[in-house]
Image 1 (cartoon, rainbow, N blue to C red):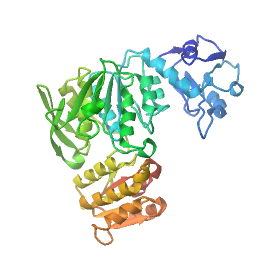
Image 2 (image 1 turned 135 degrees about the vertical axis):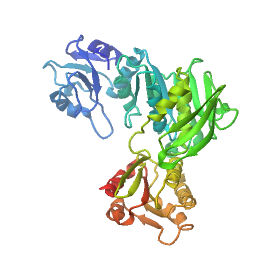
Image 3 (image 1 turned 90 degrees about the vertical axis):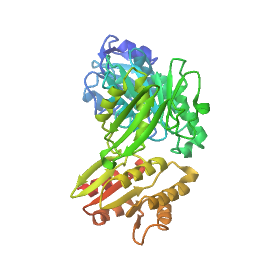
Length: 457
């Protein structure tokens, strides 16, 4: 964060400085009392399960000199502290981010979609880094708190900001887009993640399209035209549109995808008179679409296909996304960050394409599917049976339906179900052996990364 005066923060958040020096300068923002630098301003956020006003003393003892509160009685007045009172500290954080990013000369690219948005963000970051000083969200900082913190971490000389935007219901992307005001937006796909709260895929499309709510005719929307809902008639508006797909009618035409399993993929991309062959050291043929979306957005910033190819060659994905690890002759495909039917199928495709003696899938429940939970888990069981998986190990309540369907096509003893993850972890070392390729995946709440740790310990 560039140096920002207390009076600027006070004005941006529509707050009131109740003690301190309006001319003091802060150089960072924190919402975690344990991770404070001396020049940070601490926002005491109030959530459903915690109230950071209770940790103000910890923040001060760890170096905070400035605090934004909504409860004046919780603030230790004096002692050289700057204390700003705001009606709502979460909204104040968002308002500060909205003001701060408007002060920077930075091109912002917003990315949303049911699946693939984090991977697309990572790929686009490495592409843009070839030509511009670039920043992105780290970890899962893609929501109403994480995105403002990301924006507020931008240095003054950042040229491109790549911003993933997550949502679980209507209105959330509108809020994030209103803060960041993206110049370019990408929608990776419309699946059924969070359909329990959205109610329908059509509502999911509506929610994702909120990323264009602040667009003008100068802005660009890039979409995956291979998705059945991301048609030109559904996504066109008062802005420029670029489509990625295998059709000759797409703006960016994706052809000749070659899948080399754990060694990555190759594909060709054509745009107008330009054509280039790309290599990506990230597994999964579905990532050819994600990479092409990133290339399309980058080219609008003046990045050439050759520069994009160099960036993709250096790309590294966020941890727990198709990360291949190994120990004692066992390969583990760690894709434990989250799970939906689309991403589960894509991960099983990677498992099938990865060399190994046996293919083992260790899968946990997929959440947020509402009335579709049973059918979606059954469909995954059917898909596993089509992919040549030798051993399917499942845990969770909904995964019983996966087991029932998989048992129809897989051999005796090839499907195991554990009611709890603890039971699975107690036996997983006896289930896998040298030469195996093991995919581990499940929804975030299933914490399947602990299974990965157990296999590798």
